[in-house]
Amino acid sequence: MEESYTTGLPASHLAGSVPAVTAGEKSTTKQDAPLANMQTFPPNNAGAGSRRGQVYQPVTAQTAESFDQQPTTNWQGFFSVSSYSQYFNVDTDIVVDRMISSLNPVRDDFFSKIDANPDLYGMVWISTTLVFILSSLGNLSSYFSVKKANDWNFDVSYVHSAAWSIYGYVLVVPLGYHFFLQYMRSNTNLVRFWCLWGYSLTIFIMSSFLLLIPVGVLRWMVIIASGGASATFVALNLKSFIQENDLSMAVVAAFALQIALAVFIKVRFFA
View 1 (cartoon, rainbow, N blue to C red):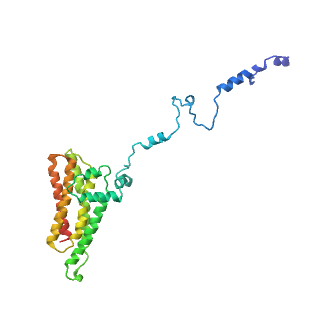
View 2: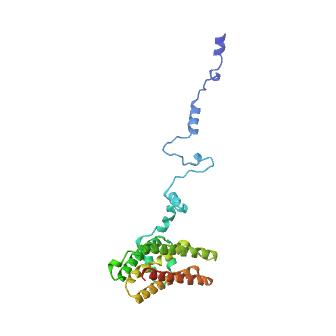
View 3: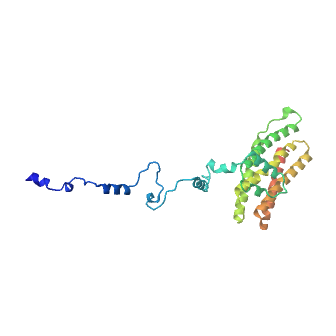
């Protein structure tokens, strides 16, 4: 009885049995199933897109170029050296050209020359060179002034005086003008100011060698001429930068400060 009951049931309805697939069903299954292709991943057709319906697009040269054009910033904080690397991105030709421009005081286009790439390299290099020259030539000048070589001693205080006066001047004066012009609601750019005042010291490097001539009147003529040229260079470019008549006293003060620096160089190092 039990054997006849079991064999009488259809085999396709038994638990755990898999229904047979006919030939027609096999062809339908092959047409509906997506073709697997390991060579193209991810797929680039619209049906295989993301859940949002977006279509995958391969990265091309034009897409890569658009990524390169994304605006980037190099500023990583005040105490990071990488933040200031962009202000030292100049070569020798650029620095020499700007130094030559500073020797022509009647031109007031220095800011337009450095507008695309103001640098701090010139300020650091010129200031350091001037400190070395003033300390060495100042001692050499005192050596020429003594009658006997045994009476001369190297004066190390010249190094200290040159360092604090030149570095202090080229850092503090532009910084003071930056905050003053901001207070007066005028145009200001600290890096450009440092660049301007740094290159304005170029003429003092060359005039220091002429100050070795042991003639008092000639020394004063040289320092007044070089100080006047440097002061004119700063004043004219500063005036063209702020372009406001009510700040004319700031231009006059900049001229006077350059003259005062020139007189200090003469009195302290080439007395």
